[in-house]
Every structure is written in structure tokens, then in C-alpha cells.
Image (cartoon, rainbow, N blue to C red; front, side, top):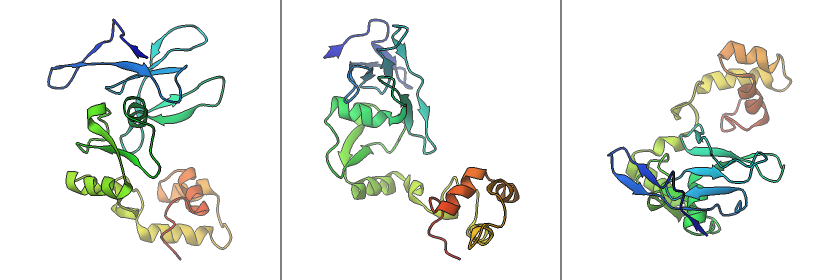
Length: 193
């Protein structure tokens, strides 16, 4: 079904032009959310009966996300671009990921999205000058640590943990969870000691 929301049927973009906005039931969450072709999300089934536009936040890479909840189940993070493309395009094909035609991961307009392979997505990133998001270690723009610091941290963690995660984190000005992820091999696994 296609919905026309009388109060919110137009969006003004940065250039001051009106963009037509179409709303549909979100693929996979049809009874709970509406999504627009411009990447806005509305919760339609709430305990209080109120229809509410959701606040969209950004993950660490700048991608718009929202916390989806339905049927009393535990919430999960949903990428807005995926919701738009699945709803206005097609369900995700096997081995495909969302690609942004203009390289701007914050632009979730359906005209900017397509399914493509990881290799083509990375080629897009090189072409758009956004390939830094694929960098590992200290080359990643959000990295707080250098490779030599990781080796020092790993020496404190292996073969037996000498100090607490919190104490090690304070020494290197990072969070306790960062140290835990290093210890479990979820971060910096490419650095060996």
C-alpha cells in the first residue's frame, strides 16, 4: 500500500527544492513502520496509539539508523538505506549490499540507492574519495590508537591478563570495551605480538 501523509508529504532539500515524498509499509516490518522514499521513518503501531516520526541517528560511519522494535521483542538497529531500498526497490539479493550512487552514506533517497557487490561498492568508494572507511588500524580516520600501542596492550593481555580492562583503557585513553574487544579479537586482530 502507498500512503499519503497530509502533514508530511513534502520535504525541502538543502537547495530549497521540494521533493515529493511517498510513504510505504516498511519491508519486513509492515505492521509496525512506514518509510518514505526520502529516508524518513514513522512508527505506526505503538502502545499509546500515536503515530510518531522516529528520530534517526547516525552510526560511527555516518550512516542513518534507527532502533526498530516490534511485538514486544528486543529492539535492533536498522539501517535506513536498507529499509528504503528493500521497500521501494526489492528485497536484498544474496551477496549484495546497499550502494550510494553519490558516495554520501547519509543520503537515503531511493534515487541514490542500489544493490551491488562489495567489490563494486569499494570501487565506488575509491571513485567518490570515501575509501578511507575501509582502512584498518591507525590509517582509519576514527582510530585513537597506533599499532605500537596495540602491541603494548596485547602484551598486557596475553598470555595472561595482567591488569583490568578499565586500568589498561585509562593508560591508553580508550574505553574498557575497546580493550575487551582487542582481547577478544574483535578489534585490531591483524596486529600480532
